[in-house]
Amino acid sequence: MAQDDLLTRIQDLDHSLQSIEAVADLPKLREEIESLQTQAAAPDLWNDQDNAQRVTSALSAKNAELERIEGLRGRLEDAQVMLELAQEAEDAETQGEVAAELGRLSKEIEALEVRTLLSGEYDPRDALVTVRAEAGGVDAADFAEMLMRMYMRWADRHGYTVEVYDTSYAEEAGLKSATFAVKAPFAYGTLSVEQGTHRLVRISPFDNQGRRQTSFAGVEVLPVTEETDHIDIPEQDIRVDVFRSSGPGGQSVNTTDSAVRITHLPTGIVVSCQNEKSQIQNKAAALRVLQSRLLERARQEREAEMNALKGDGGNSWGAQMRSYVMNPYQMVKDLRTEHEVGNPSAVFDGEIDDFIDAGIRWRKQQETNV
Image 1 (cartoon, rainbow, N blue to C red):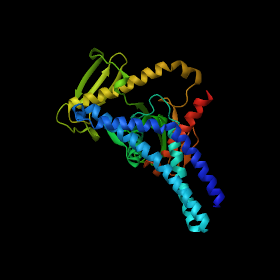
Image 2 (cartoon, helix red, strand yellow):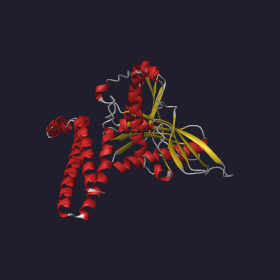
Image 3 (cartoon, rainbow, N blue to C red):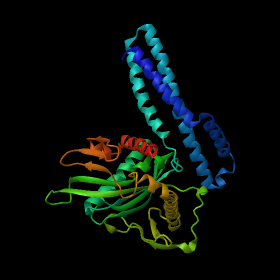
Image 4 (cartoon, rainbow, N blue to C red):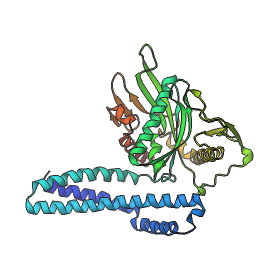
């Protein structure tokens, strides 16, 4: 690549990075970090463990955000210096190194730029994800388990923490449903574009005649509630049932009635948690899930009129949004953005960032067009 082209590319990346720095508001971010550091240094911090975890988690997330932006700025400045030295010395090898570094920077800055599109009220929060088998029998249950693994692998690739609240196994194979939290900055805003119905077409491994089967699984994404949400759930509004946890095939994995199912009587919402050893822990986790569902219900009610005006943007629970085809050809295609790849195996192994980025850009475009 010619030196003038490299210089133009540096200028373009600098402009993009300036926009990111403006949206992130670095002076304010540094002030927030300083305040959190003061709170984290308090000798009585761990007297309130919930608050301590909130402070330390927020401090870690904001430090990581600042380091990421400052790191990109430093690398871009270094690339400019290297280009100037290469130009003076007529060093083609160094110029090639600059071109390679700019390619890497371009991808990282573009990924960070997508984050600036997440401006919703709950976008910065952790995500509560539920995957459910829908039409398709045992193939749908197996597909639901494949999707759960896909999100687990995606989170693992990014170093995000995942906490599983409930797993309901199907009798023959796969999952009836699973609920888990992804704990990372902007996890909800990022994963919310995954909500909808996913469709799998393949030769069924459960069909003795080797016929092609189409199956469906649903993905629901909610923001995790925080103390400021004030979701009041009176005791008389819920029914709590306890039962023994079960694993694949229905076998019991616990000898005590530690699993908890909570029914919210006014709305009929039912949630359960069986992955903790203690009944108290399972009840607390189930209540957090119920609060998230009630928070989303309240948000939907507030936005009902707006949604009626702009129509369904393709993000509702029942909206089919992505197809995974493994026979007669190999393809994964998002039906909203038209983004597609020819390697389903990589997608199921967690390589979904391009789909997520395209979904976020598509959603922003839909909001702009309203």
